[in-house]
Image (cartoon, rainbow, N blue to C red; front, side):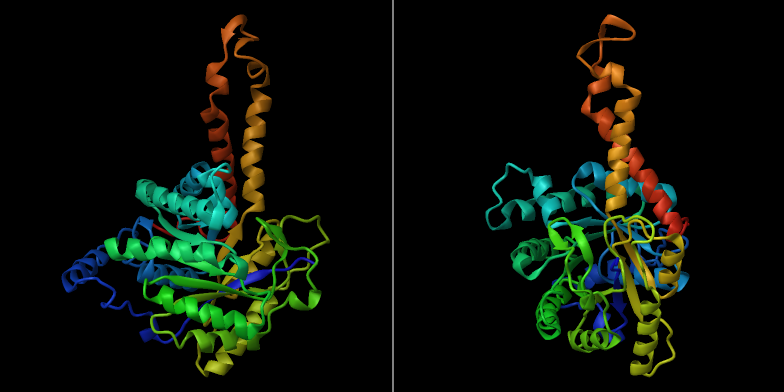
Amino acid sequence: MKLALATLFFAAPAAAFAPSASFGVSNTALKMSTEAATEKAFAKLPASVKPGVVTGQALKDLLEDAKEKGYAIPGVNIVGTNSINACMEAAAKYGGPIMVTFSKGGGQFIAGKAADNTDDAASIAGCIAGALHVRQVAELYGVPVVLHTDHCQKAWLPWIDGLLAAGEKYYEQHGEPLFSSHMLDLSEESLEENIGICKEYMEKFAKLDMLLEFELGVTGGEEDGVDNTDVDSSRLYTQPEEVFYAYEQLSQVPNAMFTCAASFGNVHGVYAPGNVDLQPVILHNTQAYIKEKLGNDVDKNMFFVFHGGSGSSVEDIKYAIEAGVIKMNIDTDTQWAYWDGVRGYEAENHDYLQGQIGNPDGDDKPNKKYYDPRMMLRAGEESMAARLVKAAEDLNCVNVLN
């Protein structure tokens, strides 16, 4: 059975989301920020959302816009500047926001597999380097970008601690965090321990205007070092009561912004037809339960994120969006797309890639312009970007900026 994971953005009391002026930002800076926010950069988005990295109130406004209008943001795992750039190129083409997602392994790869990773040093440094790259170039693509990190299980918390320390330093200098959000995946622990640890981190994140994504239930399959292929099927589906318990606990943190990854039937990876049984109706049922518990007239109090989205049918994706999904994670499909671009380039230029000199045009003809690494890497970027444009179409995320 394929396990699906959804993240829920909790609409806690308004005061819980109000950015605090006590986090080192002067009144003058706040006034200038408010004035700047009134100048809309995108005709269809809230004024707070600008080109470049989106954090804090702007992130909250962006997610609320997605929920209200019925689109979801592609959340893409990356492994280097080539895949990062492909994400932003795609967003510029389809006219919508993008979420660039770093994993622990992806961060290590960015730093270099030969780099010393004692105490997660390379994983931390690589994620920071990648985030700074995004911040340096994102505005050039003219799109909103959410900087996020993926699954962090309990044993990997030192990795998040290192990123959080970097985020605190960045906040002191710039008045906003380095990353928009981090995910903690403590689903292997008891519900009480899971949420207890998340609450401790939420208190730290809230001081930096950061969003916390946490997980309830388990995502099946395997991705980037997280292997749940043999998980007990009883853990594949999150109960509404668990979600509401987490909501109550985390809502106690001032300035809290959080999302909850809730399982509903799919796994990481792509599977043959007939091997997957998604149940997005679970998301709809959870919305109804939370509405009843809160005693309000809001049909979609929660904002969901769809994990394990690769290979899912368009029908299931659309139905999940109707339940409040505002982001879908994509990794397997974009990995294949990048490779397929490189593979296609080699196939097309095969006879020019068999030596430095000599090709069908002549035995003395040079091949440098064909084996220049930028040629095959660019082919991978273009193919990955094209796949993300297709994903955006499935997610109703096309032309949502202007």
